[in-house]
Amino acid sequence: MAGLSVTELANTTGLSTDAIEEAETATAVDPAVVERLRLTLESKGVVFLAAGEDNPGAGPGVRLRQRNADDGIRPQNLSSANDG
Image (cartoon, rainbow, N blue to C red; front, top):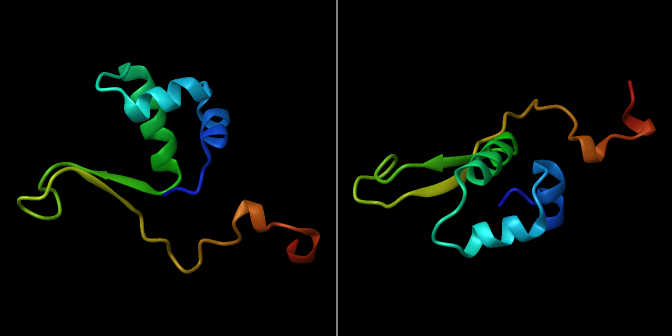
């Protein structure tokens, strides 16, 4: 959803790829791991929704934050051609 590979997410959070893969499949995850993942994903535009938060009767979920039209140039698109 945020466009990150497991390796990129590991590099961004400081967690190991094993810890991230375990968090994806385990029923009980270390709260510190959850917090690091949550903070990192929120910084990438992911919004976590509680059960019923945007739709009564719906379970918990995620969505991407809507971006403003003038967010500027994304870091991966920076180059000397648009340096100014």
